[in-house]
Amino acid sequence: MKYSGKISNRLNNLLIKNYDAEKGFKLALEKIDNPTTNKFLKDRSEQRGEFARELKAEILQYGELPENDGSVKGDMHRAWMNLKAAVASNEKKQLLEEVERGEKASLEEYNEILYDRGLVLPPSTESMLKRHRDAIKSSLTLANIHEQLA
Image (tube, rainbow, N blue to C red; front, side, top):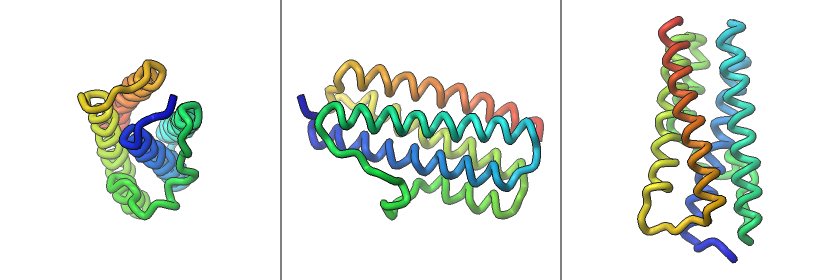
């Protein structure tokens, strides 16, 4: 079985955004000197790397070619561009606000795919996307907590 072109494109877009998110969290981790925040950022970076690996494997399983790197595409996610600007200023609170904004954008992207009635996803893909989405929801809660502590 192969994905439709529409499903393949949407999943590759998610894959790219997860690559970009992983890089964004790593960049933030390099700029912030706070053990609690660093653990949060490291965990998110690792999580997004795992999401990317899972998406890549799923895309391959259905006979499509996954994107290799988010930076190859010129359309990095807006939230992660904002994150880089926030990191440059070294302001922890602003950084966490950008993390929250990026996570909200990711959550929206996952929901758009999951609730698109024009897409019929294989059960394994739908299950994986729901698991990712739920983890991002939890991440948002943690980002809010860290932001309040900043």
